[in-house]
Image 1 (cartoon, rainbow, N blue to C red):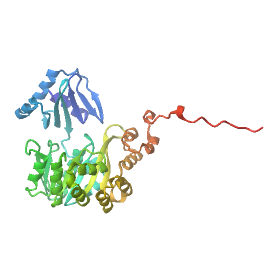
Image 2: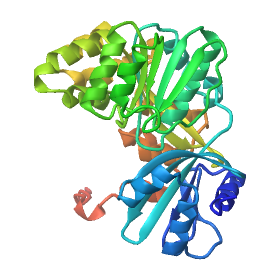
Image 3: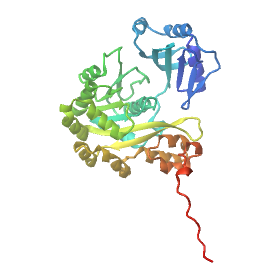
Length: 374
């Protein structure tokens, strides 16, 4: 058993989402969003390099020795399956292990908006799940793939970096391919997938213009494409795609978004009200004729108004979703306040008043002088 497995086992037993190892500090666990040290001495540079080297393949060790960061999946003998990132920094080696549950979560268990399941019923077009790093995008996509796997008879090709949740074919056939192991790039993976009679193509990350262009082509030619972007709102997602492609393709890109983008689901993870977990809270855009027109006429800044008024279609702004979760006592109001865009509406729910903006009494006008009549 690799020595690093002891830390991973402890993390799994504690129910943490991530295990962090770095030189000069004790190992740390991320518990419900907070990073906490375990009771252990500070890790030395040579010690940590030894821990990491034990779990690398020969090719991974050669790449790491040349200065490359590594992304791969690792199955611990004691602690389960992990997505791993290994890197170098000023004090030496560092590593982050993201715990991957052995069972693929369902859409119901994640308590995602009902519209997410409906999006899986489409046969053609693009659905994007977006958010910052660590907001559960991969988990949401895995749940969507599992829903498709159980409810439809499809050929699903999933391109990942690295493979996280392992899907066993049920009603559908699920083919999982890993960047660097089975495919040289996401763009090449999409190009190859289109020759493999796919119904659904999952693209782990639309990280460059070539991948975005290939994914758009797949969506336009009769496939359901699921993908992710590191964007924090529906509007920013649309702007990112338009800006990522060459200027001469701008009009074509806007036309694609108007015709083939089905939805954007942007999520954050908020601490639950009991502080024993985190809940995904989502902003949802569903493409309509009105939103399509705004995209084509460069008025994407008006899209939030459409989201606000589109509740009957499953749409919602992030602030609307956060307020609903607070009033239902599903999330910690203080944590939700930190993610809110227009914070004034959330101030009455905040329990930690130190988070609220301070009122500068020195700049306030003096009260009017009192007058009295004899």
